[in-house]
Image 1: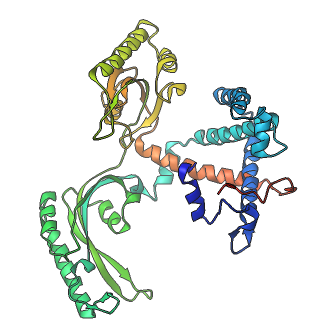
Image 2: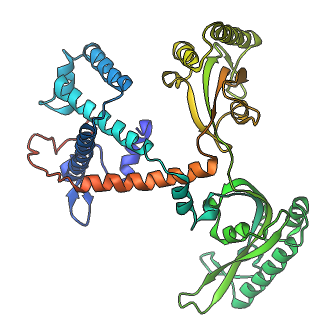
Length: 450
């Protein structure tokens, strides 16, 4: 999965791909080798897969038809692909990869077990639902965590104001207590002066006027829609104050306290300008789309981006218009649109009927797609063609999501926590024991041709 960087990645972990696994120590404390590591990792993976498969069978869970079909298709093609790679059969290929006991029957059983385990795990998580009372109870002690904030700030360090210093023979500069005290006083004065700004433009002007050391500079950074949990702790409480209003500004000290708690030293100041907050009680949207991608294109020599001519764009638009007309002439239902998507869409979501759920203001979609989906005037059943850098999209508005954005974030956290508890509890009921590993190539050299 690390592509061309896999060797470098493993080397940083201490694994030499050109030496036997059982001759390389992976854990210096226990003396365990890399062979031990991979055997134990396989054992834990098998423990998880067998446990999830057992629970799935007990629940009467069936592998989704499309996933079962994918496995069947893989094995239908495996024999041909093996022969194209120089092997006499699929079994010969599998024996080379997995050892002398491998064959298509055991390998299909293995892949099916993994698919069932993964699908059941995901299905269990998807079915964890919470009513409003449960969401409010979970939220009550962390109200601010789901708010987003808009603000600008500068950080000034006392080291930006240090003057003088004594350089030793190694080129290291040290500062006397008096020089450090003077730097901290200059820092305080600069921060307090910046905090007298009455608007953002004035703050930027004052930042530019601050006199700092030659190698330092004072910048104003602007943050938008930043979740409380992603904000520096020194700033978070000030921003989250109920009294905070647009235009508030403050110089907030960044101090360290001695280990005995007796002395506090200010090492810097955050000068913060508050712009606004959102409680994120915003509606989310579910949409479907059919993508008619642009075809052809030429590479711009300067930007190296693919550029499409008007003729190429018009061709995609004509196809999109024709498909929309075809849908309107038929049943013109969501179901018929899903069928159209599965047959004609160029997007990877075609198999899922082009469905995008829980689209919200922070979703990372191209602007036209996002803006259409979140249009306040949108009604269920709305359908329209829009253009993005990928081509023309026939957009279909399914409706507003069940939860607003805030409650979606909360319930997602609850799902993750409850899923992890359920999973860990399930694994605790199972014992995985290493028995006969005599047929494993513990002395394997991953890349023998160094």
